[in-house]
Image (cartoon, rainbow, N blue to C red; front, top):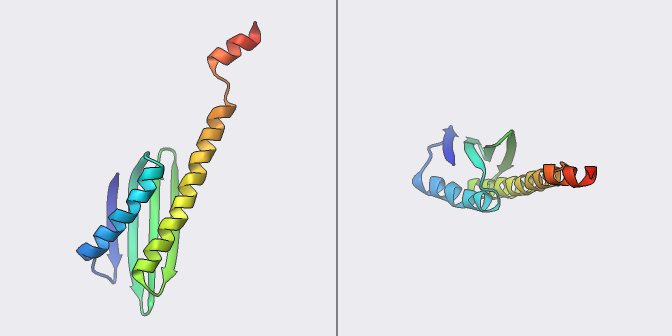
Length: 110
């Protein structure tokens, strides 16, 4: 997994980087096919905004969160991404179950 962390009007400190990396482990634990993660952290007066784009095979998942605290915004966005990733994983499993296999097609024809 490639992580690209960008800050707009904000310096990315090592504790913030470590916090984002530790939270992203939760996503990779549920779905290990994550290719890239782009994270944009920005601040505007009293609002902290976090945007994340997850690139998985065949799909990009994008979410954003705004909160008064940067760490709370990161927590919120990880929760959103976790739900999206689990939903995408269920869709893939469901699609795989719907497509007939060659072995099943051969037994149906006999």
